[in-house]
Length: 79
Image 1 (cartoon, rainbow, N blue to C red):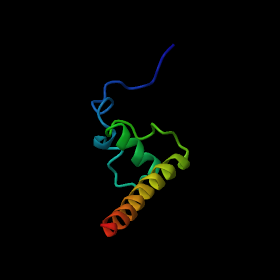
Image 2: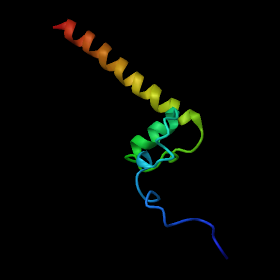
Image 3: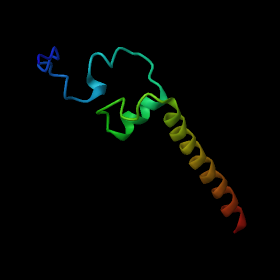
Image 4: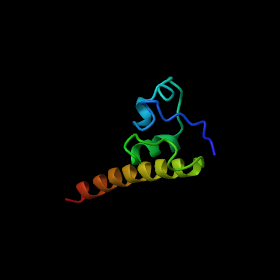
């Protein structure tokens, strides 16, 4: 069995964010951004290609912020 995969590139095992193919100023979606966040910049496809998981994490982040603001408003006005 012969493989045509090139293992000699120095960027193969480095973080995705420093690869020339990734740094071509293309827009990334929420799923890729969360994958990069969770893997520390090592992989942009760790969550797969389904856009719903990126939306889920965005909505969780927004809901956490909204609950924090509402909680601060409610509990600081009680005193």
